[in-house]
Image (tube, rainbow, N blue to C red; front, side, top):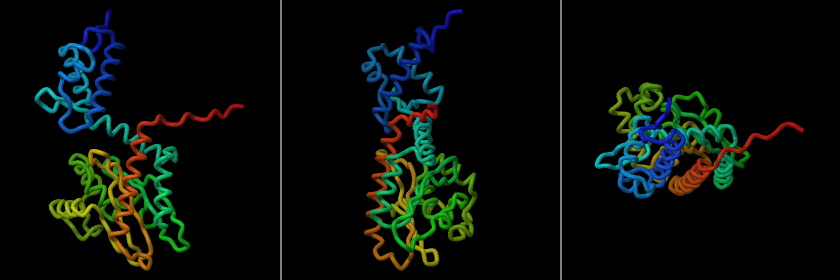
Length: 274
């Protein structure tokens, strides 16, 4: 039996190649209002009917979105897949650019840092940097892997900058903050608190003798990649605005490193044979 390909009249290999070409074109245009069917057809040198059939397949499979008026963009599915690969590489110590950027920031401020991300509605610790002070805060205690997302500054930043769909998952996985954050017992109160964090661009808190501050790590479209938090003894904290500016610059560097690591293939496994 002959296979006609995916809605194109071509072989499956040709259809796959063209589908990947479309994904590359959509990626080059980023998100936003997307790119028109006519422009995709022009760039590929194919008629609109062929490209439209390919796009319909990509939309059906969840890799592209029809945003109306004949315009298309990548779906969040592909971005999430690429991003989750980077997160896994960071947590395994393979994303060298990100880890180097985190270490450099920690050396600059001299304090302990934690890099976290939102995964399936839960906060996940990706990496830690200890800082170079003799007296330093234990991030394992302040930002353990098992803490409720509402209980620490990085978790609150992750929730504040989460997409609408991701925030639904946050509530499903973590319930309401209650005693973990200001006694809030309804979603309206939490939403107002998260809006305030977005407006401020950070979350900070004094916990006993520790000062904690976290900012988002955002991509070029302003979408959440991660959150980075700094923890220091209260006696060493002097200027929040200056520290915030330094941390935000560091977050921009982390975002750039994550983008670079996302584009780089993972390192090949070392051959243990001899």
